[in-house]
Length: 203
Image (cartoon, rainbow, N blue to C red; front, top):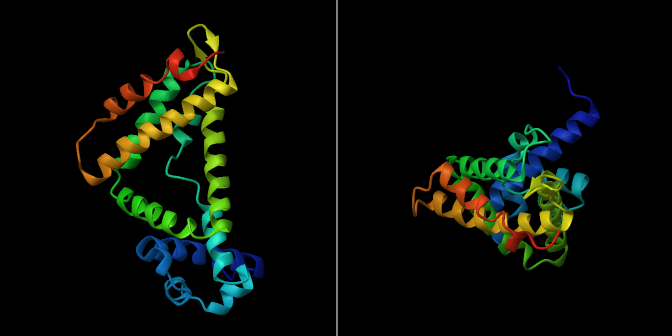
């Protein structure tokens, strides 16, 4: 079936962003427009037409980046389930993603991405926006959940989300590089240990 002009434009845009992500994952700041377009099977003209140039493509790639945590399994948890159930589900999902064979490639991309964005204020601003959006998504799964007989406030959810991200990121990196073989249940137990008054703060 022949694609419409809009469909073709969207497909080319997706191909270039995916190619940029792969090349940046390998080359970091040394990534060239020629390597990206060759991988995507397109021309540099397509980059200028769709993104205005290489930097525009890099901005779009960073804007497209949503972080490593896929929360779809967590979204299936019923609203009435307590906070600990949600935290454990998030931790188990993070373990599954860390144990995935593709996790090493993602971690390399994130390392190269930091090298790229730290030298470009526009890219850094876009990355901060993506990180904040991912945090807000995580907070949305925690706020209002029952803990110690009371619903978790937004402020408490933010504090817990940041602690969870730091803990799970460290544990996940160790799994990816094979430092230790932490189990899914260990991730869940460690994450649930953060659901305390000391971490959550006042209601």
